[in-house]
Length: 531
Image (cartoon, rainbow, N blue to C red):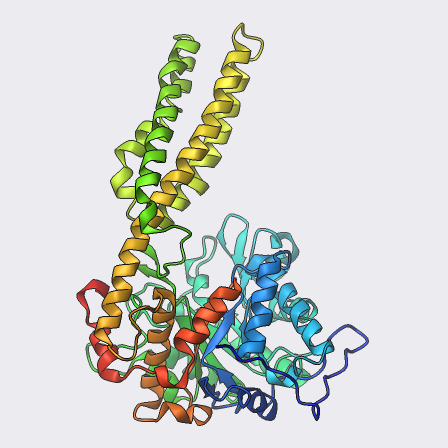
């Protein structure tokens, strides 16, 4: 059962400033007042700010202002006990921030939410192809074609200004430097790790000024490489803290870190082979609050594993999918057989015919591709289909004014449509394969933590549940989960693009009585399936 939050009559919503920004920021009193509305849910304390934040936060990755379902999901999260919203300036080229700003504006104006009760986190660092021309005058490094990265004060100042406008806020509660390690992988002028530490310190010096201006309340660092000590672009938290201290920044303003953590990526929890403390321990010892993300998307063994059973298919669908796939293969292969007869025998014709053998290619690689839905989707959608569209146009151009132009153009239309059907059907088969594997994994996890993980729990809620428990055990070992308002147990950021996802996460991992013990966590992490 979900609870609904309402603003107490004694608390008035903050007025909208003339420049269109809501005044105020997250406060100790406001966040605590919010949490008290949800007595059965778990909350954590942010050490340096005193904020009370939900054990799970709303992740703004892949949410857009033009999708009503995303808006409904965020509204439900805010009224159901989640008071952390995480986003980034480059998520959907700013559309994520705009949606969040619209929802906040509506709920504050309708007196359904206090600005002081919610913690807004956003980030900057990425320069995407969409806004690349706008940042040519700031110091940056080129990471790929028309994409770059920057930590320069001028860049950060512009990004904060733009984010505040999109969010409709006077103050961002926590502003994060996003993946500064990318500066080490630049194509034009890669930085050394020590140079990146210096850049972080220089950026923090500027962010201290932004705190003084009131445009941000605090700052932090989001990094994919923080937990992975063997990564070539690894950043050490100890070294970052040393660089900040050397630059004489206000370490009270540096309040949080964010990094990926899930069933397969567990480096942050694990001590190094020499017994040196884990990332979670180092952060806790330095009063840094920890946000984790990607609980449902693991990058392990060179593959991306989706940790969810909400894949739009059922295991029982497999026979029908296989039937449809067989028909789709027959249709595409049949078209490929007749194309040589429609064209001539010139070298150019032979080269064209060789471009349309995708039925055979997929058939030969069916077993391998079906093992990884994410890889198959990327391969078909991002690599094969764009090339196929271009090849079909080349084919049409080659028969312009030919005696059988109409026949070949019709062939091209049919081939494009049938290959699309083949791709979609094949991806459904991949989804069934992943679903079967994930259902088995969910059952295994429930068996490893009997009484704590329900047998019927979805893999998504269980994965987030384990991440939350690992944070809690690492930060507040020996504490009673019922003391959640007084302890720093971290916050697991989850992509909740549908209202049903919000309900699943709240019911599956945010209850006070759902914390796994250290022995249960160790048992799960030592499971060979997760190796």
